[in-house]
Image (cartoon, rainbow, N blue to C red; front, side, top):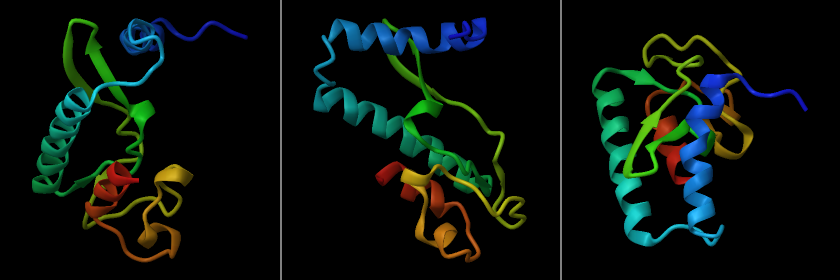
Length: 117
């Protein structure tokens, strides 16, 4: 298996170390709540800016470092303005919203659906 690029290794290392520290037993509800609040703030900001991320999933949420619960939302490659959808095939299968599945017009709400999926 090829070695991932350096930026990818360094971005995922804190998550892996956190899981190792927790002995892969999952995270506490207070930490999950903290992560969720950060994500909701990001989604609120994106909504105010009328931007759809279009690919919200755990792989696109990075832990900034092991000593802080701060996170980053990454991979805006599929993102678009809500009033100018670009792609028809968006969102990962397990996080896909009903309007995307049905081929209907979509907006910023699809990212909220992905967060709750």
